[in-house]
Image (tube, rainbow, N blue to C red; front, side, top):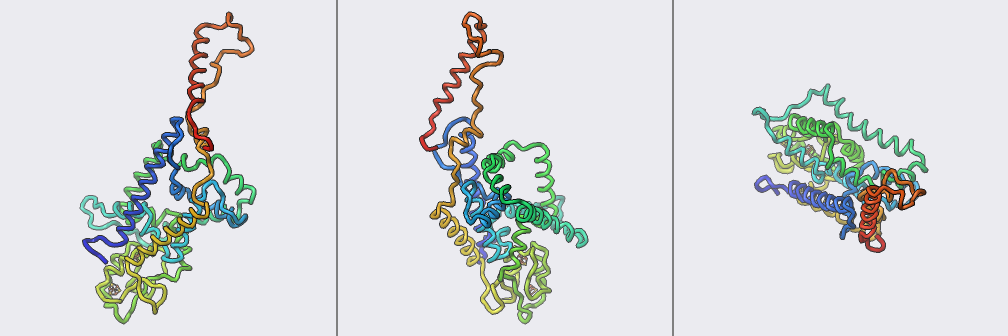
Length: 370
Ligand code: SF4
Ligand code: SF4
């Protein structure tokens, strides 16, 4: 199905982008209320934990060692497992069907600067070593967490204050961005305009991990040499710069199962994405349903089994990010010397004001059990 350039992939990408935006706004509201000392009347959206991949990796090790899902960021681990599951089904399909960064990269890649007709392509001697950067980053995290991190350190990390409130700190990173972070972001955006999918192709460790898992997927783009006319449209349109026209099946870890090659092939049944040579090719609509089903079923199972919401109480969020409680006594007042006659009236006034503020803070209504 391809009508007015609207493909099932585009629809799925924008739906997931919408979900991410809603989650982001809801979480922002949650943190704003917490910071002003008010207990939010709604739950923190658990989906925000999808943006804590390192925590999810540590949680996976915890799951492998203990056999249980930790209650600190359970949805982070569930979403991580779902995403890895999609790689077993459709290789790096997550990158081109779900990931909002992938969608933003696609839009950035369409911007034409100074009338350039197409983004630059790095020569192979630069492209290959640069592509290995993301595998090195992914390998570093996997090695450090799965081979170097001892069991007690895993437990200590999971229950540390840093990890428990990593979602709030991640939000703060974006809302209070430093000038260095802005510069890095702008440089990456410009590079994504000049080079197609710069972040995804060269730097994203998540994509690298999915690429490696994707090797175990039976899903592949397959070319029927007898039906192929050799026009080369598949190669020219592939965002992964894969020479599809010269392969009988695409094994590259850069393939994101986007189906662009299949959609651009003029010859009927010359190209397909399928689970075996003999099986029927999957079209965009089927792929879309597959992704939605995997996410939907995974999240539903997590909710039913009680592994979706975390166990952090609202009062713990208030203690971590709420307004600082003022010291009961102003500086310079010695509680051991409280003879009223000896207290400076100005200091006494300050003390009374602070006591009143403390009383107001304590009167903040925190529903029981939160
Ligand atoms: S165009 Fe084809 S070969 Fe290239 S990434 Fe998309 S599905 Fe894979
Ligand atoms: S687009 Fe289709 S016909 Fe053209 S080279 Fe690729 S597989 Fe062959």
